[in-house]
Length: 168
Image 1 (tube, rainbow, N blue to C red):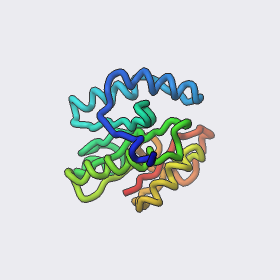
Image 2 (cartoon, rainbow, N blue to C red):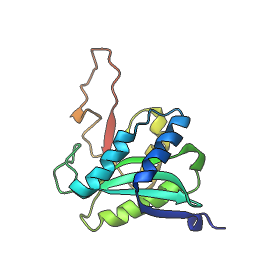
Image 3 (cartoon, rainbow, N blue to C red):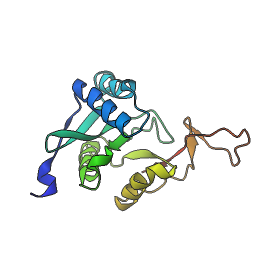
Image 4 (cartoon, rainbow, N blue to C red):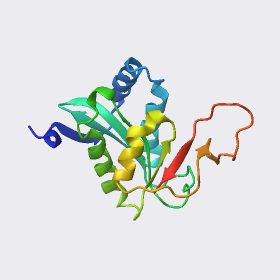
């Protein structure tokens, strides 16, 4: 059976929260229900579009499209943003991430001619970084961000910072 026929994309449901938190914790990820519950609330309050990919009927990955994001280097400029793009490890290399991105980009075209996303700069984000480049995303030139602010040239306080770059 062709991989694409095994993958379906749908809106996120409340019961998906428990499934993804359980699966992510089993992988050793720092998962909490609050993040996904926020995405579901944002659907009602901010028009967010949280999507789930199923593989053979099992939830396998998710992302959320914010049609007019207020965050990041391009926030507040009328551009949609893709956030929290995750595919569970046991479902990777099956085309699930590409199908999720296809649908998010298709939906984003209804709002603007461009879409943006942030990607972590740590090695654990390597697969996502490669996928974004293959799909034609390029850095926007704003440099690395931490807590929605540009990183200083040199971190002097010794603190570990979660940083990301913005791709459009």
